[in-house]
Image 1 (cartoon, rainbow, N blue to C red):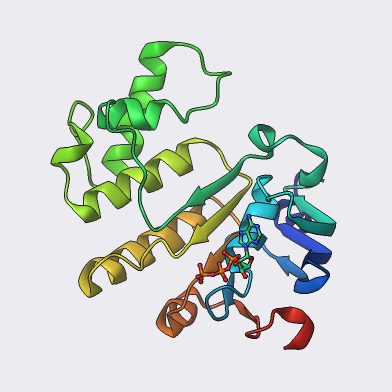
Image 2: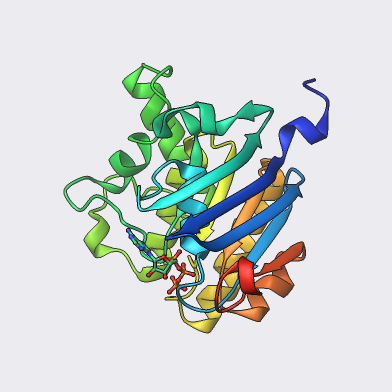
Length: 223
Ligand SMILES: Nc1ncnc2c1ncn2[C@@H]1O[C@H](COP(=O)(O)OP(=O)(O)OP(=O)(O)O)[C@@H](O)[C@H]1O
């Protein structure tokens, strides 16, 4: 199974999410390792709700069913903390009271116990994000683009099974947006991570290059 690429990707089978009996999301998709499924649709159509469902923090107001397998693991059978769904939001959401290095080291799985090893791993991934030597910096002193790269470092170091992107580029100006977009997709390919990208930007979908799931104004039920 280890060499079976299908097991490594993300499978959404007959996923259906309803709100007050209104079908919001209905989809079956297979996302291969390193590939991106872009989810587009108007505000309120249920894009973030889909990511919450996969991550395990769906509000109880919603009713959901279906199956989600990532890296051969049944995610819905696991509590949120064990799903290892890596999420990037519009805001980098760095902990303000921790250094940049501590922000990244915090996300390293607990089976790596040695403090020096954790710090070394944090420094290594920061360097890979073009942030070499930033470990001791206060997040407040970073630019928007630098904060976004710390958030990416933090999510990658957590050994996610899937990468969920909730409009992570939308607050960046055009130049940074282009850079960050290619960095994220490149690292996802390198780590063979399946990606779901929620966006309003057609250019994001084009660069992502994978399939696009479009939700209608009234959800998937009334396309
Ligand atoms: N906790 C909740 N309880 C009830 N309804 C909710 C709750 N959270 C969201 N909703 C509703 O569910 C629908 C889907 O919301 P969601 O945030 O997934 O949309 P979205 O497509 O991500 O929107 P946007 O593009 O604005 O981020 C909306 O109609 C929203 O009002």
